[in-house]
Length: 165
Image (cartoon, rainbow, N blue to C red; front, top):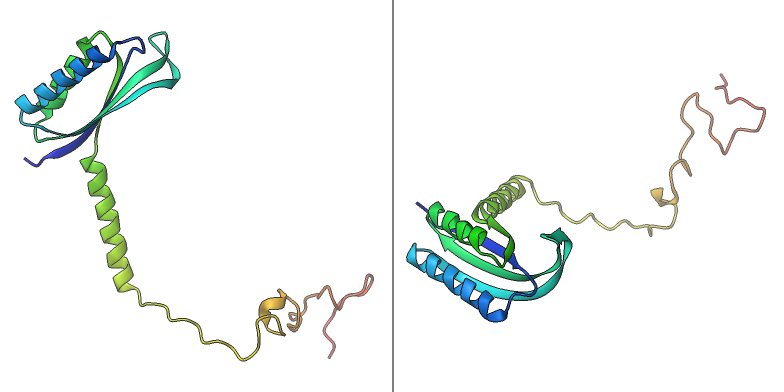
């Protein structure tokens, strides 16, 4: 089974002492190591304001952990420990390797498609500058009127444009 990459973020009560948060992180690190996972990174983001109230709290102490594991049981165990921990008010685990695989697949598809398409060469510069006479003046200017149609530049207020024979 291949190793999977996970992001785990949990929020503790804002009044939780720093020592208790450090102890909780230690317990989670120990659980990761015991079950054969690898803890890539742990960041304490500190107290931040939340977008909405959670357990009657407007602020929370955020902790971020990035880990690798080949077993889904490890994630279940970490979430169980977070659920029964009193200071934790919210947690979320996100599996990242699926997203990385999908992005790599899209990049591969884009590269294959780019190889199939011939490269566009730069257009040869024209003899006349862009502002002089060419099609840069806008639609209908300098072009012959369409057959049977009225051109706003040629038609008078009461005249109809009819082809003459």
